[in-house]
Length: 152
Ligand code: ADP
Image (cartoon, rainbow, N blue to C red):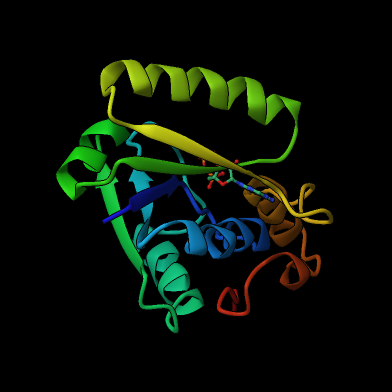
């Protein structure tokens, strides 16, 4: 079974994330959207809130599982029997960063392949951090996120 882990902070999940997962679906038997818990990171939304929004977004898709993990992504993949990591690429900065992470992960586990999908055009300017900025300042964030994401 081809299992991919799509790791990230999803603070909050955006249309960019949704696009990558949806387009990854035909490539894998199962995609685990995995929220990484990083004790050194400050999040805008609680882990439970982020998980709930992801679950609602993909509630109609039986091939998608939603989970949280801490520690190394490679160890999480091993525990889940996943041979693939799925990541999205928006721009050259993403590429440089992702290259280093993917090459390191492959040194840690030679079985693991990272599969990259390019952002669909129109979505490459969306990032969770910009969505958080828009939210903080009362702008219309709804055009950047799945309908499940609504902040009262
Ligand atoms: P991280 O904290 O690991 O950067 P993110 O939640 O910001 O977590 O991103 C998770 C993954 O989603 C990364 O591979 C990132 O490149 C990808 N991603 C984020 N925004 C977009 C987007 N607009 N289009 C495509 N991929 C995206």
